Image (cartoon, rainbow, N blue to C red; front, side, top):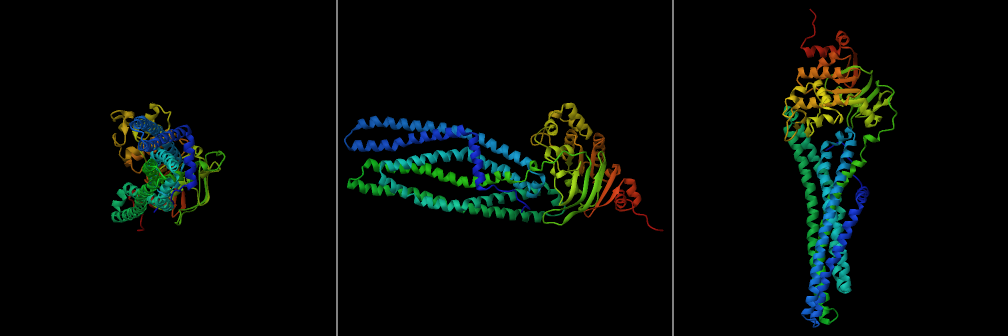
Length: 587
């Protein structure tokens, strides 16, 4: 469904990442292993002591044997309980710290992704990885990982105890578990791919739902409801099929496992009874071996369930860790610092993947402090050119440089000191008005915040809020409308104080009067800085130093407003259309 999915980590990468997480909290992990090992040893005493009681009572030991050994069994059981609880406590603390590391690393990697990579992959995939997949990994590290270790140790100790009590009965019991190993191999060969397919299908569902919800007005305006419903149903149908496939794997795996627990116990009782009748095995050994095998079913069942969970969470871990294989903005080349602030666009061509060229040989120079407006019909290439100027994408051919250095080659810190792109998209973060503004400048005082709000025309409505700058925004707080959210975004730009500001119809959601005030205020604040505006309203072009007219991916006109109107070309036609004037006709 997406043009380019975010990558997946290889199994070796997942194992390496898991090992790094364990090493990061190695003492706690070692403590979990030690405590669970001691608990497992304590748990082995019960069946062996019970077998001793049976044999000694049958040998005439009397009640004294029970009085002597029963308290030991009770003491061992209590010790096992306490050690297990302690181990679980340490394991949960280990898991929570590890989950925090996973989340922090995911956020760091997500923020390092170039916006072009996220756009091509779709926000639904990133959202699904950051929510459901990270949660699955965290649950595994907190619960499944420690539980798997606990029960694996207990299972190993019980198997050794079975062989120690009576080698013949022990071998028979362990051979009875053969169907479990066979069905486990069958399951593991299929599970990872099945769960990866399910995760990808879930990402597609999240993507189409998010896209439909965010574009609801467009869907309604162009009557695309049926098309979006069909696309949603197709995505849901694919998700359902992948989920049914993983369910099928589990319905084969678990019944075989459950039946296999009965086979070794029944075999030991039958063979042990015959051997006891022949006098080669004591009744206590038969009872102890049977109890050990019954005891083995608990931890072994837990191990197998956790292994099944690991297949699902392993696929989630591969999706979470896959961000490490994605391109990162920090990996841009070691470019020198720009020698000046002039922006040069030379012979630029650009084509989106799988599509035709949207820019065809554009040449443009923007001098420091200039106000340039880009106008043209929809699809002319204005937004694409603005993305290249901001370094979001690199041109297919040609170059876009600032101070002689390719914009797309600058690392994020240096790039944002040069260029900031402000689009129609905006976001209000959960938190106060002050928190939302200080994202751009954490050290800003209240005076600076009010000044920035005043510049974009937002001071009045913010002062009317119940708690002013301390008013909480978002869910449970003040609900901002489109113009208010956009004004907050523009106020952040004012606080960031970039050298070059690219406005891609950034005031489109504001009413004409507010938009004109905001644009003029921004221009006044950014005096001496470069402002490039993709003009939605032509009064922006009227106020600019120069106007660049884009048509069919080419720069067809460039000059001041009055010059272009006098030239009576494409811009003049746009200007007359904007004002409702008709071209003069010959008498």
